[in-house]
Length: 164
Image 1 (cartoon, rainbow, N blue to C red):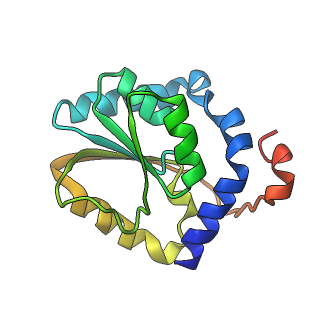
Image 2 (tube, rainbow, N blue to C red; image 1 turned 45 degrees about the horizontal axis):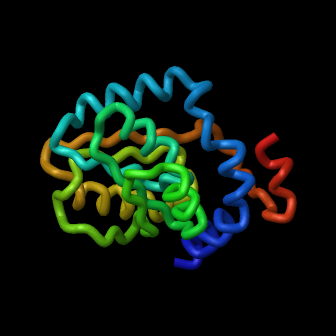
């Protein structure tokens, strides 16, 4: 649980700078947009799709623009504040992906774009089991993550260079 609190407080501290650099990133990522559009079409109307680790809500917004019923969840209260401010008409909640406060089998899809990278390796299986629990039978999952073996830590006091 300590790891989750560190992630939450770090993203709370970095939120304003992170939003300034990340919120419009999909405009420059045609492959990500294509994957998200295909994902939205594959899930279809059984929704909702949960954007797990939604940050400022840019992925949720894109899915919503594709016609998906979507909601976003993030561990950082400050990120959820930004998501709500920037994306009217979409539901956003503070939540821990390791302990989702939703009923079994409720979601038609889960998208986690670059959010599972914050999990300690020992927690990945538990989070995937929790995702499986809340996913409807036949539901879809789209995970995006970085490839490589480097671990990058950003000091919140030096966040302006983190996204340069």
